[in-house]
Amino acid sequence: MRFKTTEHKLTIGERLYRILSVTNFDELYDELVAKGLQHEEVADERIPYWAELWPSAVGLAQHIAAYPHLVIGKQTLEIGGGLGLPALVAGAVGAQVISTDYLQDAVDFAKENAVRNGIGNIAFQTLDWRKPSGIEPCEVLLASDVAYERRQFEPLLAAFDTLVKPNGLILLSEPNRYIAEPLIAELQASGYGLKKFSYEVEIREVKSKVSVYEIKRSKG
Image 1 (tube, rainbow, N blue to C red):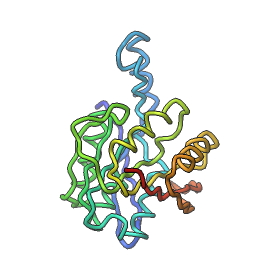
Image 2: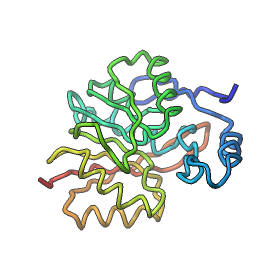
Image 3: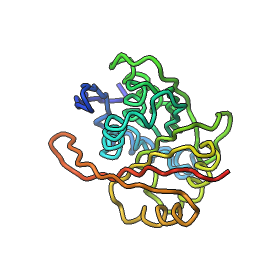
C-alpha cells in the first residue's frame, strides 16, 4: 500500500472529527525525488505536504467553529485544502463549500474524511491557485498554511483578487512564521482590513500557537 495512515480524533467546537492522515511522508518524499530533477512533479515541487494534519488547519477549523456566522450560507472555497479539516467544519456549520487542492491524492483524502465524518454538502476538485481557472469567485476563502515561501506571495495575492468576490472574506491561518510577515504587511498596504486571532492547538500531545486572520476584501 502506497499510503500508511493514522486517524486523528479532534474535538472542534462541540463536534468530534475523525481525520485520516498519512504517516509515511518521508517515503513519499523519497519516491518523488527518485523521479529525477527533470521530472515534471519534481520540477514543480509537488512535495506531499498535504499528507499531514497541520496546526494551521486545526486553528482555522477552531475559528470557523467559534464564529460560524462567518460562513453559514456562504459560498466558501478552500484552497490548498490538504486533508480538508477547515472545509469539513465549514460544511458542518452550514456553508456551501468547495474544497480544493493542487494534487489529486489530497482531494481523495479530503473526500474520505468527509465520508468519515458524515458531511455530504461539500464538493471536491483539484485547483492550482497559482493559475486559478474554471471556478467562480467565492464569498469566503479558506487558506491554511499557504504562506510558507516568499515566492508564493505574488501569486497568492493575485489568487485572492481572482477568487474572492468584492467585499468577500479571506480566512488565513499560519503558525506565526516570520516569513509570512511581509505578506500580512502587503495585504494591509493594499487596503485589506485585517483582524488577528490566536489559538493554541494540540496534535498528538504537541502544542503550538496559530494565528488566524480575518481579511476583508474591500476592492472592487
